[in-house]
Amino acid sequence: MKFKIHEDGSEARRRRRLGNEIKESLRELSIQLALLNHQVVAHVKLNDGDLPCLDLITRHGPLSPSALARRAGLHPATITGILDRLERGGWVSRERDPSDRRAVNVRALRDRSAELIRLYSGMNTSMDDIFARYTDTELELLADFVGRTTHAGQDATGQLAGD
Image 1 (cartoon, rainbow, N blue to C red):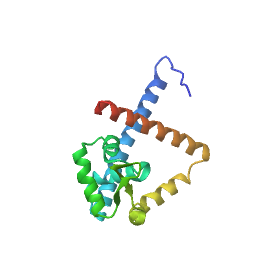
Image 2: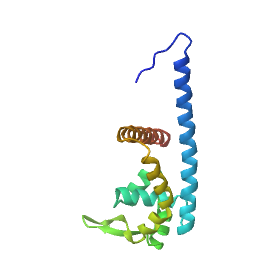
Image 3: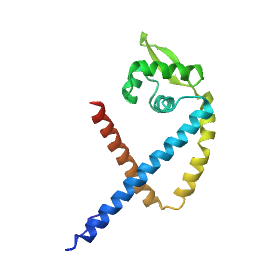
Image 4: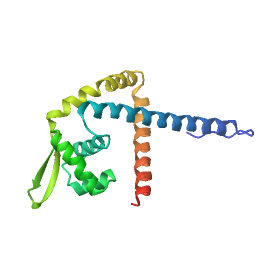
């Protein structure tokens, strides 16, 4: 959608203001999700950095520790400590790679996933209520926006990490 710029620039100012409001809302959402995740890890006795790694393993695993370190943007020694905690807590297992017995892959264990689902149920229910207020077309637009924003964040992270 293109906006016509009037001689006084009112449409351009309006568009800039809306963009700034969206960016500010995304910052606030990021803070709220970080606070929610902090409460979740406190309930399951993990550290704040453990949950993103567990999520990466769940979504993209099984992964080697070095592949997880690359995806998480963390030093391999940091990943070792995270994996030790996740394994002790029954969240993941380290298994020999059948194609290379020297290599290890980390796999998420499903036994404890119900606990996380329960802890996030309030947020998931609230989101379902919000989604119900939108048409399918609006949800498609929102899904596109969130996907593009996620990719922009991945690109920015990669640039800062020196990828």
